[in-house]
Amino acid sequence: VDITHQIPRHDIVSAAFVIKESAAYYPKGSIHLVVIDPGVGSNRREIMLRYETQYFVGPDNGVFSYLLKDKSCCAYEITRTSLFLSKQSPTFAGRDHFAPIAAALANGMSPQELGDKIEAAHTLDALFYRKAGPKPLGRIVYIDVFGNAITNFTRSDFKGKVKALKLEFQGKTRLYPLRKSYSEGKEGEGNLIFNSSGHLEIFAPKESAQGILHFKLLDEIILYPGQ
Image 1: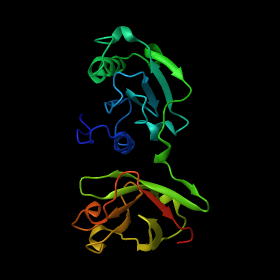
Image 2: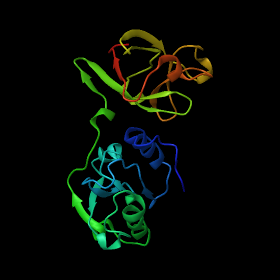
Image 3: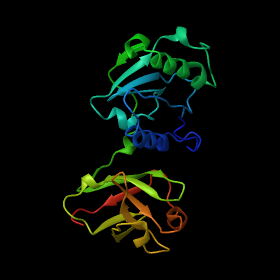
């Protein structure tokens, strides 16, 4: 099953979000082969993850950041190099290294037979919101094909009913009303919605919010408390 071939080249941030969102819909025992690997051929580690009931194989470059934040996630550095199609693969580790390991997992081998457990793997801290003084500081962590910006704020970050949010975005502070659907949004400007995954999203109905607001991946958003 191909999850997607539409990740922009070298875009670890977008790939991490897609992996997080997709994994929840795959059955027990699924094995995910992830090849967003701009550091191919370097000394970056090659790893496997056991996350809940699924397995993930790919580079240790932050692409598994969301999964690794879960304390139940176990990471292993791949050491069973005898299974590699080519021991040295400076440009195509996805085929030569990761695919044989994914196949070995599919054939019943355990992560312990294929590598050594490691205490920590690389995560991208920018993907997780933090406090900027009393104000939560978030970022745009995914931009979809429609030009909607998905942030790392989620519905669970807010208590009670919320009708509007005061955000500082691109150096401007304004109150954004929350919409219940795309069709409720005001055309020609940015609107907010909690999307189907629970993330706070900036959108423009029937238009590209990115085209209107000119945002880019990892742009900062400051949320003013009490709004």
